[in-house]
Image (cartoon, rainbow over all chains, first blue to last red; front, side, top):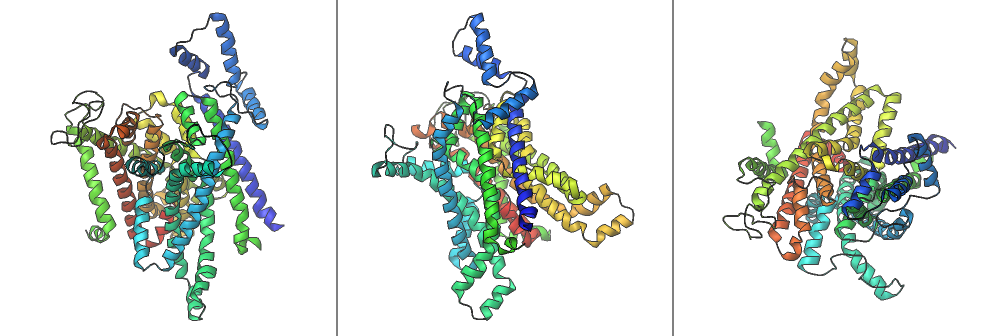
Length: 335
Length: 284
């Protein structure tokens, strides 16, 4: 009970507050602009060469105002904004009119979710295992070589690493397709050629996300394990003749895991942003690519929809990790 | 002098220091450029690297070497603006939160926590779309500064929290030092190394963010930066056409810059305090 009162409830309050603030920010930001989005859209359409007579122009302006949710006072708009959100209505995409934003996001989401989930878990697990071993055997040569490699990969932004891999493996040696999620014209089906095609296209984006994520977890884990290793309980276990395998898996890694779980929760927002950027590099048909197209065409509703969904998804994922934390840390459980 | 000698004992410091000096030299060279970086067609197009055109020329008819000098300079300017302004915010927030404690602390840390868990990239994109027309080096730097302080404010706050419990704080307060004086005179010296090493990390983040925004076309593409140089090369299909010198120049320069900045901050913070290694790895 004390756990619920002292930990769960404040954490849930924080969760809802963050979502509330994030969504409010997404509501306010577009309204800060001095230029009217309705006029801007009309100007854009005009520059593409379409003509409207004055009467239908008025109708059009009304429709646009409604589409952008710009009717009434700021407060009314804000209320309507929330009402629509609760109905799962993110408005209509303007440049893929009349497709609703929620449908476009729905098509793109599985691609991003699949890529993100796989690479985050893979990078985190691999990075931690290899990092843990490298930290335990910190004086070995291979451990130092890996550390230097991580020191080079670690500072690279997602875009540069992904782009370098694309240059190398798709343009120079042609091992992997340059862009896309499946071959053009291939039908969705649950058979081996389709799955193989998906995997082949996903390989490079997944590789770049796993490498970068893995390098970060590797580095942190290596240092943490080095520190835990120096603690007296490990020394004591060694002197007491506990088997080395048991020391590593039960004493060292288990203690070193905890900050890594917190780290995963904190880094999730960054990883997600990175996945979007990586998708853009590889023209992978997920949220990132959708975002890219929305930016290019100035599709504000779509960008807002993607941002809103991302805020909710990321904060929820972090909440789940935080709530699972007691499972790994007995000290929290018995608090 | 001893500090410098000790620092150079770390090979990472030596390497990154040399690379950064070369990049700085490049940036300074931009002052002597024979060409205006915004003008097109000043040299023959699509030439391979040669003695006249060190890094070749691009499809816009610009000399890539001189273009690169401007790119490095402008990227450094953006990152310095972003880094310095966000340091001011981080120090203020971290110190006030750490020193005041209670409700102030809770509110400020809630804000920085919120910034940490949000997909900031998307929010920066939303904002960048709004100021797209007025985007220049300064606005971009300020935009990035506004979002780059959250983690470092936490680090500084943690430092202040531990300083507050030490005896000299009580001594200073009892001998009549005001809050401002205490923070500036007594705490600042402890926080300065932290501020410096986070500054380098933050600069690196800002350069990366600028490149990403440039690829999305959300910055002023007429101003040469590492990001816009790459964006032009990509949009002219330099890769498919085989103009490797055009596309590789910004990529290689960026990689050098990122690795050098990271190694510099790593070796400096390790020198200042070996125990801070963990904090460094955790940042960004």
